[in-house]
Amino acid sequence: MNLIPLSFAVLLIIAVGILFRKNRKIHIPVMLLAFVCDMSLVLYIEFSRKAVEQVISGLPSALLAFHVATSLIVVLLYLALIISGVQIVKGKTNRLLWHRQLATAFLIGRMINFVTSLYIN
Image (tube, rainbow, N blue to C red; front, top):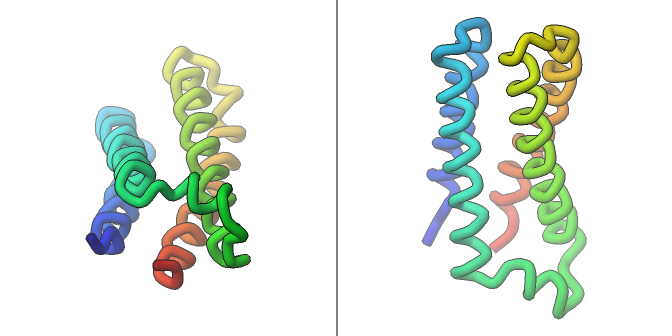
């Protein structure tokens, strides 16, 4: 199954979330939707292709190893963004700059993840 269109759809969901970053009532649910969709893709890839086993059991190509590392970083950044977002909602406005910096790193990582996914099977 070609997952590129689904991955691109997640990027579009993220773009909507960014467009509404100043409107929490839209931003938060949209970004949580992106997270759930992305994690669903990761789980699907793992269970259908045994991706982690392939990487661990053999010598992966440099591109695949880079893609997997980027994927792991993106997942960790998602979690950090959720944590910092919850803190902001709870009134810790001093976390806003940190959240924005994490979001920038996340966006770069997610774009790299998407581009590398185009070149691995």
